[in-house]
Length: 442
Image (cartoon, rainbow, N blue to C red; front, side):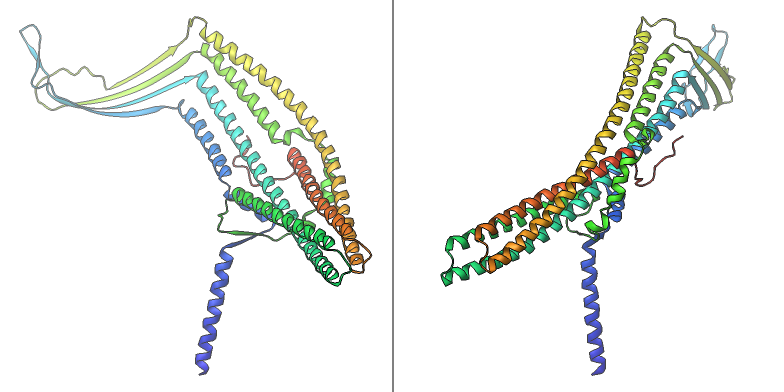
């Protein structure tokens, strides 16, 4: 009997553990840092961006390999079907079947090829900067969604708590109507507020689901998985850190947009050089080995040299203005890019000033709206108590509830504006490093 009980207990424990494992497999719990790292590892766009870096590296090595010796081999068999070469009727030369093996090595070098390899190097650096910029954008998007979800959950919780309060007030008003000390219209007014709060909760929950769906998309998490956030707004809101950004210097060289503009300018410069090398010479060299074997004992004539080398220097002389026009166009494109680079510098400096202003204003609005929610909540609680003792009307309850809903909506937007302003300024300053660069800058 004792063994039977122990066996049943073991089976129950095993069943409980199996169920817990199944639940854990469908629930993913993330801190903010874990959520961003998960997105960096699984986001589809980042994976494509990483492949672009490798593709640029392959293109560069293809350009370099084009300047290195190219070696090929040949095998050949020929049969003249008994034909003999007649030399004036007095003698003839047999043309027996033969086989040959050949090895050819060729190499071509020009200034255009060298510049092409440099262009490949610039393209590789641009792909690497783009990849790191994509890492930053994905991580910051997940960060904003994480905050948005926390704010929305906080709002839903607050609305539900107030819904319970207003429902109690409605029940109290109905009892007052039944006792003949209040009119039905008073109870109906509070009932409308109950419906309004229920609608607000439903809208907030639908908005929260949209936020989680956006997180799933950024993190590449299946819709059969539940995402659970393990940190709170209080854990993550670091006002001192965010305000310190207002006093940080803007080092433009750290900004990814500026780095891309700089590399793009270098790319146009190299393309101008490439067009200029259309006037340059091209040097080609080759070596050829040929071994021939005749499948006959007849006398024949072998005029194929076993070894041969050659050099060719090709110099363009006249192209009817084509090369000149191409070079002029590339030169003008380079000048346009220089202007774009200067415009980028100015725009980034202006953006820095604007984002500092945005952060200061957003922080002030956030503090004001947070206090507004606290005051509106206290007013509703106070009105509710007064209503219970007959010292407040249903209109007072309606006004207090409406004011609180409006305050909560404004607070949500203010909180998101504050977080967004902080993230945008951090992106401009490139204060956070997400992931690792796929390639060293050389």
